[in-house]
Image 1 (cartoon, rainbow, N blue to C red):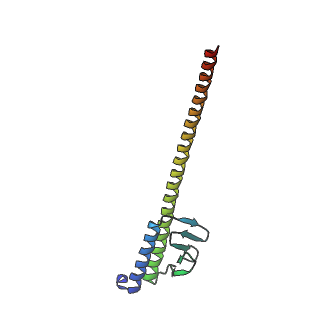
Image 2 (tube, one colour; image 1 turned 90 degrees about the horizontal axis):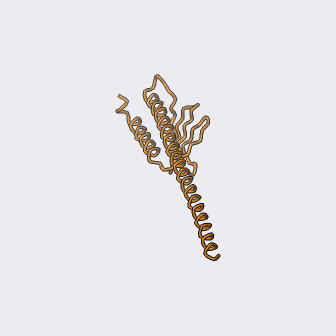
Image 3 (cartoon, rainbow, N blue to C red; image 1 turned 120 degrees about the horizontal axis):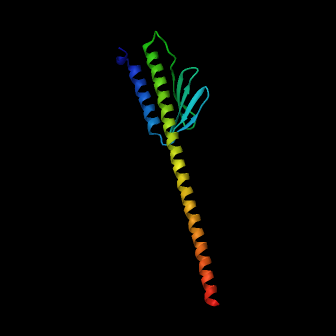
Length: 144
């Protein structure tokens, strides 16, 4: 019967929108402590782990919405909020970990390519020095 509750449907839409913001964010910064903060492109999503509160703030720090997500076995809506909190937090953690690993791989690949380019340049410089020495020796021999 919870599905017919207007408050439930509206909050579910809000949670879906937060999922989209997290998923589509090109930039994702993570700060942790008792409150895990995910700084996204347009908003900051805060998970207060001790008090089970979900907050969304704009970039200026102005609070857009706060949701109390503490579990209550007597209130179905509160149970749904708790489930949303947990699944949204897991989603944010997983996505942050994936993005961080991807960035590390790209950084490592870039460093490897730079290292190979440096080695190639050293090899070219060494060959040019050898060629210069050979040409100088050839000029001396011709001059004798």
